[in-house]
Length: 499
Ligand code: ZN
Image 1: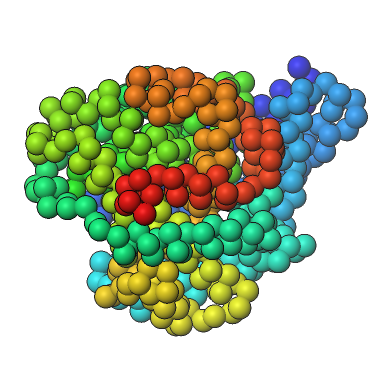
Image 2: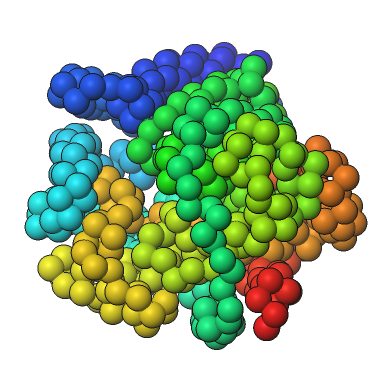
């Protein structure tokens, strides 16, 4: 190994130590921190993130990356290190253009805004959050004018979360989907709905924790490289491929949502736990593309978890752990987990209407950044679109525009990645079945390990070294298309709703 590569590895180790600390602070803030811990955590987080930003944008690292790109050094690098050096150079060149003072202002504004959003949501009072949102939009525009002067602002935001996915491609695939989905949703909602009264009971919370453990184990979550916590909103956090954590939110009135959150976050975690160890601690050592990441959590959650065959080998054990399900048959359970409702809340939505919740957010974000719609007008815009797509109007902003935390920390351009994930899933399912045969049969036979193995081999092991469009070309041999997902929805829901 060249001296310069050794020096790069040393710098990465230093950055990882700072990353570990800020992520642990984040984990703590979101799980068990008492309210009084906020100021200290916020201040320490700002300190460590600023320190990491200083190192990752330093002249020293800049020169080192330039030197590693010179022909005699470059020739000695393998493909993975070439990807790492190239990606770091691109990101550094962008980040170095952000004034340090602007970066600190952004971090401080994000922290204050997250807190204001929590307060606003609790009181269903958009006016508490609106000034913070306005400030974040302005700061985002300012940051992007430094980092991506060559891109239109919303394309620059999309690029941050799903490298290479531009709004032209997204407009095309979301358009395909919306055209087929709106009539499908309308006919489903007009059809006879299943009776869900048996599910409206009080569920034991400890039983839910045990069911989560069973489900995570069943899908292949590696407990020697992972643990669980509880938070208001479920999330996955990877400190490294050997320490991946998932959270969940348990409720007495609903045992099904937490099951699917467990499977969803478990899918994210399984991805991270299976990235090739040689990529650990680098920009390629986890998946940085949120659409691709989301495709894995959603594959487990929807394509597998909402398939009746997933439950055949384990349903009796789930019933034993959660006795409230004892007199609910597997068929009734499967019917309920595929119950389509016009709900207000994205995170509680079924897999079909979920797509429309995301399309709504994509259109609102375009309205903010492209059409200059003001912050004051957003709740009404939101409500109009809800009525148009799902035929329902939120009674208040807590179940409308305030429901998601994403915009509270300035994560604009993030929402579309959820739906891209599902669109990729339709494509992956098609490619998987061409190779492994029927997923229904594999699941019914309890051979979920073979499905996971296929995902490990084709997607997980590469970490970030393949960009989203490249993943689709390598795994599916085609460009992004919503057609397989639409076909999956039509076939499945035609059966459930006798359409
Ligand atoms: Zn997710």
